Length: 168
Image (tube, rainbow, N blue to C red; front, side, top):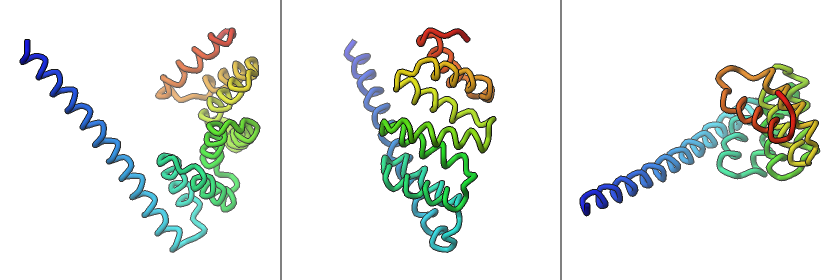
């Protein structure tokens, strides 16, 4: 019995160490991305993709102000950059700035109506504001445009529709 307990504790400690290692590796990866994109921007300050990628890395590192600055710059350089609107909208959503978030999600959808992710996030913004029918309609739009590999998000949207009293 003691052997089993020692084995279980060892496995638990090993798993925790691996999770911490993976988190460090991911943060290190984002820091490397920031460094690489900063170099690219220094060489070509008109590279919207570099601003987007660095903004996403800042976002991953919870540096939202820096992320917004880079996403704004990406959009200044390329106003048709749906991914930058999506990312900036997500930041606004998390900051509970729902009107700004919805504006950005709408901009991404206008640029690419088949881009499913902005629909999902827009649904969340409506849900947070208790605009349930808007949320249901938006989740339905997400489901209609989602790729088959987005199965988990599709299921989340279906569940949200049901919880909010809608039908799929």
